[in-house]
Structure formats: C-alpha cells, structure tokens
Length: 77
Image (cartoon, rainbow, N blue to C red):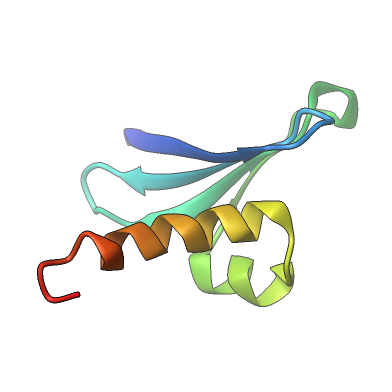
C-alpha cells in the first residue's frame, strides 16, 4: 500500500517524524524513523497516542502548528 508523508520534525540526532496517510484507505498516522545509529527503526503511531504520550516535545509542537494552520486558513475562522 502506498503512503504519502510530510515531514513534521527532524531532531538534531537525525530522528524524523512525518505525518503520513495511506493513499487507498486515507488512514492518517505519525511515522517515526529512528536515526541510523539507533537502528533506523520505523514506527507507525496513531495520532491520538502520539499526542497523549508526547507532552511538549518539538515534534508534538510541529504537529499542533500544522493542525493550527488548518484552522487559520478555514473560511469559518
């Protein structure tokens, strides 16, 4: 299945967090890619779980900013 991604945040150590969507089902989730020295493991995280466990980290703030742009650009805003 094909997945489209948009990078949310890349940490100084090379970890990447992307907003991802499966193109057929349109399922949206967070894709985390650990840096190569940590093994480069890919992890898919449900958005609700990502926000619940994240606190105030830079990657969570990036997702919240992106969500905020959807509201700011809305004609009902």
